[in-house]
Structures are given as structure tokens and as C-alpha cells.
Image 1 (cartoon, rainbow, N blue to C red):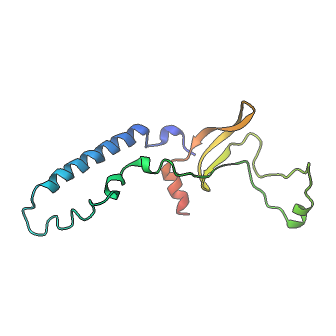
Image 2 (cartoon, rainbow, N blue to C red; image 1 turned 60 degrees about the vertical axis):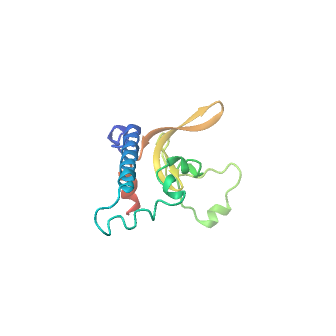
Image 3 (cartoon, rainbow, N blue to C red; image 1 turned 30 degrees about the vertical axis):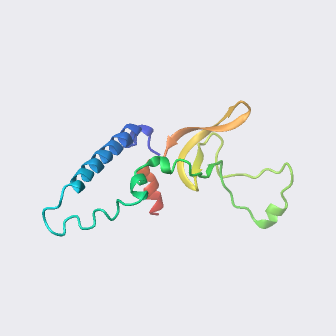
Length: 143
């Protein structure tokens, strides 16, 4: 895992990219209002701008309320069914994770970070120690 300083994308970069896109959209809108000098230029320009979708396609607020499943994984193991049926209250199942090892944080089954378990006000939580970079996530999707 890379350190957070290796992540090439920050919130400032996102803000700058969004501002740049809004400026480009504004310039494109002014170009649409001037008549085309050559036949065929701008033939389909107005096709995509009609309707509410054209106004919201760059709006990140549109997706902020979509729920996702966040999972913290301590470890995994494989067990035979005969051993599974012998489990009872108080049984201990050995996992492949080591004590003190970072826990995996998954969103919808995709690894996004690692962290350490903390207890705050008698509730378990996780302190993120390492965030997976977008490049690493894409590389894992291609495997």
C-alpha cells in the first residue's frame, strides 16, 4: 500500500477540475448561441442539452445519498463442513489475520483502505491508516 502522500488526487485537485469543467461548459454554451458559419457544424449540438439530465450530469450531489455497504474484515479461513457442525458456544475459529495486523476496509466488496480497531464510548470503530489509491483499485479490478 502506498502512503497517503503518494495519492495524486486531493480535494483541491477535484475542486480545480470541477471549476475547469464549469468554465469549459460556460464557454461551450456561449459558442452554441452564435450561429454556425459552415453547414453541418453544430448539427446535433442541441440534442443532448434538452431535459434535466444535461444539468445534473456534473453534479456530484446527485450521488451523495446512494447507500453503500462498508465492511471491516478481520480475517478469513476455510473450514470443512464436519468441523463447522462441531462448533458450539465458546468455540474459537482461527483466522488467517495476525494480531495487530491492519484490518481491511471494503466498500461493496472492494478494498479501499486498511486500518486499526479502536474503541470509542464502548463502541468499536476503525482508524484508517492506509487508503488504497485509485490506480491500485483499477489495477486490482483488471486482475
